[in-house]
Image 1: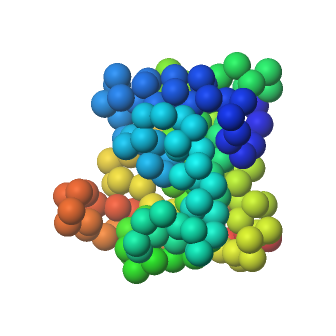
Image 2: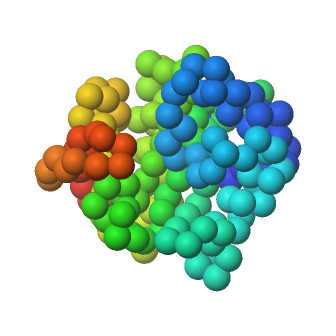
Image 3: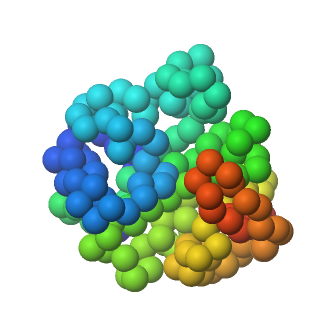
Length: 174
C-alpha cells in the first residue's frame, strides 16, 4: 500500500470509493468535497484548487493536500487522507490538521494507522511541527489510530452543527 496524490489514472477507483461510502451511509472524512462531487475529474480539479490559498474554491476553506491510499498495483483505493496546511477558526476547534477515512470494506486492517504514519512526514514538509487530529468520541477505531501514532489527548469539545462530541489529540512530529 502507498500514499500518493490522486490523478486521473485513478478515476474509476475514486468513483468506486465514493460509491462504497454512499452505499454504506458512512462519513467521508478526509475526502474534501467527494460526497458532493460525483464526477471524479471534477473532484480532482477541486482538490488541485484546494492546494493554494489563492485558488481554494470555498470561502472559509484553507489550503489542503489530498492523498489516496492505494494498493501497490493501483487496483483499489483503500483510504483517503487530507492534510490542512493551517487552521481556520472551525478547524482549530473541531476539524484539526488531518482528516481521513478508510473504505468500509477495508476497515480493521490497520490501514488508517499506516496512512496517518505516512502522512506525518508530509506534514513536516509543510512546516508543521505538531498536528491536531479530532475524532468522534464514540469512534474507537479512529481513537486507536491516533494513539498508535503518538497522539496525546487534550480535550473533548461539542460541535453543535453535527451534534457530536469530538476528542482532540495532538501529535508532535520529530
